[in-house]
Image (cartoon, rainbow, N blue to C red; front, top):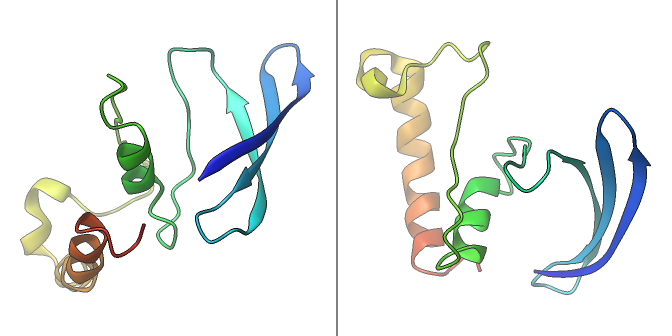
Length: 107
């Protein structure tokens, strides 16, 4: 992934940026960013792109910490994932994908 262009769209009560990014497969995509300064970045959850995994891989060794926080509308309880059938199904379906990505098959 490579950043090609960064454009400030709005600066006032918040800062909004538009990024043009080249993905690993050569596709060009645009991403909208709400800038919270250098202290934090809020990234949308996207189960297909696995944003947290990608960010962790790209930022490895930089000292940047990735912190995940679920929405208040998410009924699952990660500490007790085995107590609900829907959570078990989700974990079982995600595990092979995460393992494949961790060994570099999704890079």
